Image (cartoon, rainbow over all chains, first blue to last red):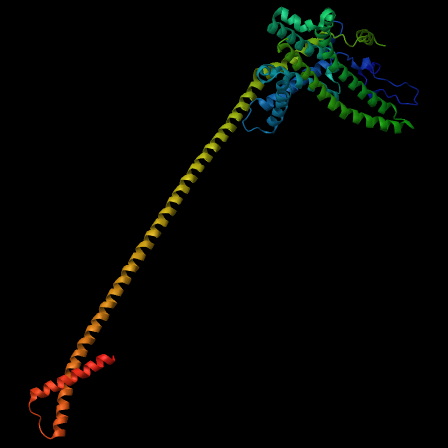
Length: 273
Length: 181
């Protein structure tokens, strides 16, 4: 098993500088996992990110279950914390962008999205797990797809076919002869690029964060030989700094994702002018 | 390189292409969260938040009602106090007036009594003086007659004449006294 770099932890390589072996740099292979169960060829398998995804959703549900199952008018500590998080998303994100009246309907979706994504990101720095599920494109893509479907159907429902088309293409007569080009670009930007960037923004941030953490973690171990020990110390400090930074980025990216979600929904509900 | 890694390497040439099973698991994981939150947990907390808001507003209303009541009671009390003060002032004024009349009456009464006493005194003195004068006149007449009789050596007859002479003398004396007074 130790020959397979996809499953090797940094300290298992047993390879140090001046030992005559190269630096086991992290790469795409760091994001591949041998299935815990099943055969990867058959599409019927179960690997670590899947386990973390399901565990994460159980944790999120468990947290809110414990906090909100029997909520009290005078809240306990746990309920208070959960309420603060809920209120932050509801007021700070949904009401701010969509408005209280129209936004109320989308609060459960946005709250679920935020805490789900945050949990998936948080796996990155939780010991033993140490892998952000959202650095696998499939997970952000599913979430972006849900938002995309909601956004497109809302636009059609609200504006009718022609209105939705105008909405997607940013139809504006005053543009004159440039109008067809502008419409083409807008159409491409809204319907094709937007959902893609929505998913990739989250994915790429988590991917890069995890790679950085891996890089410094592996380096700390790799440099632990001879004069390299001093450099290993620096690298280890970077691991701690990057972990703190990732903690921030994880919350920020979850926030950005739901903020964009709300902006899209608001765009679909807004009157076209 | 193991065969597994080869397959993996082929698959990972593009990290932006998602494998289907992970999409499915991702969807399931999110649906679990969304389903439970939207179906039960968030409506739960919304209800409680609403209740809390209402109870807070109810508390505020109660407090406001209590304050209004306290205010009205205070005003009532103040009005009563002012009335009582006014009443007391009125009574005091009345008492003062009554006292003043009483004193004036008593003073007048005293004055009257004093004058009566004085008048009575004067009358008494006058009567006494008249009686004394009368007695004196008789005594003086008799003494003068006796003295004159002894000086003359005989009893002076003609009492009636004597009397007239003495009376005239005494009247003259009295007139002199009156004139000198």
